[in-house]
Amino acid sequence: MFRPKFIDKIPPFLRNKYLLTIIIFVVWVLLLDSNNLISRYKEMKNLQKLKAEKEYYVKKIDEDRRKLYELRTDDRNLEKFAREQYRMKKPDEDLYIILTPRENRQILKKTN
Image (cartoon, rainbow, N blue to C red; front, side):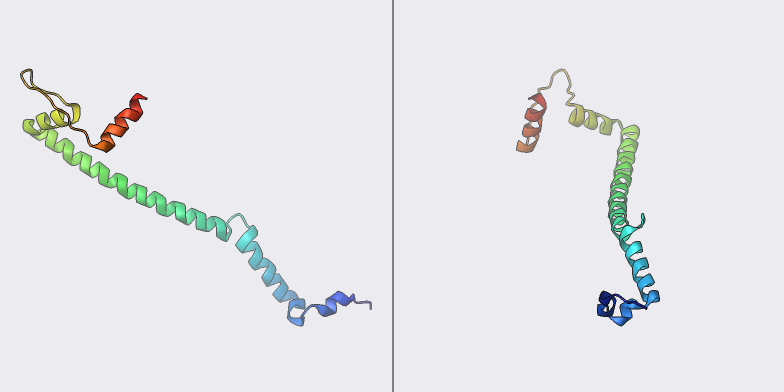
C-alpha cells in the first residue's frame, strides 16, 4: 500500500486517531463553539459589571428611601430640602449661590 512521505514526518503520537479526536474536540470547545472560552470570559466580565451596577442602584434606592422618609416626617427637613435643591427662599430673604469650579463648568456646558 502506498503511503505519502509527509505522513512519515508526523510524530507517531499525533497519528493516533484518539488523540487527534481529543485535540480537535478541545480546539472546537475552546475556540469554535458558540459557548467558547472567549465568549464566556466576556460574559463573566459583563456579569461582574452588572452586579456592580446593581449594588450601586440598591444603595441609591436605600438612600432615596431614607431621604423620602425624612421629608415626609419632618417639616424642617422638607424646608431644608426645598431651599437646598430648588433654591427656594422666603420673600424677605436674599439668596447667594456659591458654585464650585466643577459646577460652574457644568452650567456653562448646558448653556452652550
